[in-house]
Every structure is written in C-alpha cells, then in structure tokens.
Amino acid sequence: MSAALQITNHPKFEKYTLWLMTGKIAPESGQISPTLSPDGADIKTSHHSDRKTG
Image (cartoon, rainbow, N blue to C red):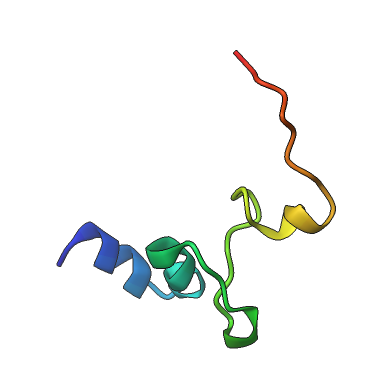
C-alpha cells in the first residue's frame, strides 16, 4: 500500500483525505484542512501576509 493511502486511510487523518488529495474541503461532509495549513481554520481570523521571510 502506498504511503498516501496509508495516511488517508488512517482514522486520525480521514477528515483530511479530500484536502490532501485535491486541496479542497467539504466541511458539511467532515472533510477539513488542518488548522496550520494556509487554507485551514485560521484563514477566517488571519490574513496571509505578503511579507517575505529569510
């Protein structure tokens, strides 16, 4: 079994399967993105900075 299938089939990560495979979410179906991802839960309260680092 490929690493991607092992991760997306693991109960802990099932809610991220759609996001991992397509970059899309479907909250009404329980398919979400992780809080720390650029499109995660923080997007509602925090806007992406155009500031470069490094």
